[in-house]
Length: 633
Image (cartoon, rainbow, N blue to C red; front, side, top):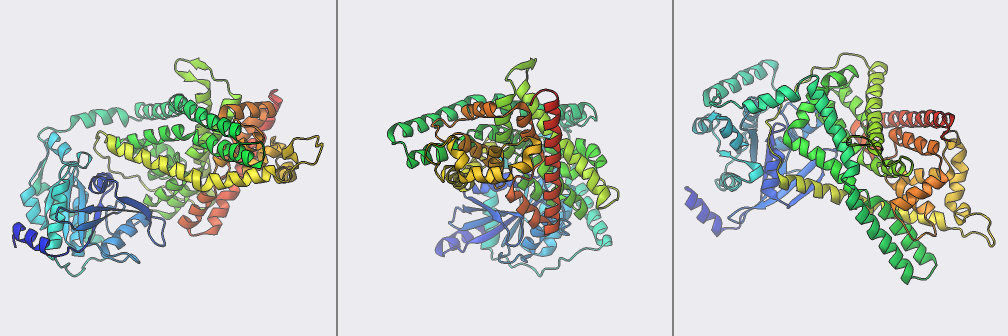
């Protein structure tokens, strides 16, 4: 039946929904294609029983058929040597519990680098499901002068081929039409003949992929010498590492300097809101609850949203540009010396944003012991949840002055805290490899993607998603905790003619004073101990808790006022000790839960919790007493 006949048949019947799976190697633009296909019609969850992220989106075809698009984790083979790859294999084979097998598989390939994906395509053909090959980044292949015999490749693979440029939404309509055509033809999947290949079969498949590549893909007439020239600098063992460190340094400096104006606006807005409510509400519990509990608590956390978005902006931009794989290559020798696999760099870099996706990203590491080492040290990376604590204490105790051309003292301290986390992660991984297991680290192999300009729309969408996650976290976690902290800080009321501040008589004061002797050697007062307790739910909650504890009876709830209040009550040694605690302490219950799920072991979660608490206490003890000895007590 021709296309016109199929279209007529489609319009006469109710078209059943269909399920499409996107499969491909990492760094092929698969997620960009998923975004181009589905736009904002997406939902993210986890697969049943595992912590692998499940991204599903929806698109309606020109004929009214609803397609469910599943963005599967990147893989090089269906042999599945990591949890992510196992999910992709089971999804393609229709073996995931509660998941429908895909009607059509869309194999996504980087048109500039077909060497590895051809072997995966041969495996996908053996599965027997209808398949469309999407040659993505086709504009770059054309610009390089790469010559691909599309007709010959189509005959060889016996499947439709569509050229796409996902970042510019080129070829998207054609891809949807070709996919729907396979569904409309009522293509019946062949018998599933795929099985775990033997070593000989793997070599044979590799030779076949090489034959197809040589037959239908000709070397570029105009080789991409620009990529080579850029890599000659960025991958240089000395210059490349210096550039990487400079980029990280600029990133941390920007977290302070760029975020200043929007933070001032947010602070002013919450301060005005608090003053307005205090002016119209009579003194009493309701005013205290709204002004000192909700506004002071939530406002002192939301003010850090600009800094968190700046950090994510850099990470997303560098990843989309293609630099992240280069950074991993540069760090391989350093990380290998510390007992970490080269692939650990990307999970650890992700942990700078949040330890949870960093820990989950460790699934890309094949060997279990390398994966476990990465999981155990990932929380030592300075996640974005620590930024509110760092910036509050730095702002309160470190002068805001320039110490050199373009160098801010506060930014230097922030950089030092990040460096401390990185150094401790390398040291701990070195010890882990020599205490729990020994052996050489496997060689590091990674495909370097082609450089490409990031899509402004993709970057904006990812930043919006991060903002929504942060604000949702503020609503779901921080708000209830602030209500609890306010309650504990307000009740019971002080007795008549009380000589001490009201909070000294509250439940919070009682709890803090009861366990404060454990923290006295590291310089913590009971207010700091009170802030640590809700801070275990989420690190940044400690700032809101401090704001609530110190702002009881105070209508102005902003970071500047809180910092000034801390500077009045804490010594410099105490502030530095608190920073040292937060560099190492496992102040995040959600992270502990993810470690338990990823390792499927309470033991490894306990090991991580114990060593991080021990490190935090020891670091705070040393920092506090050294600072006191130097006259900062």
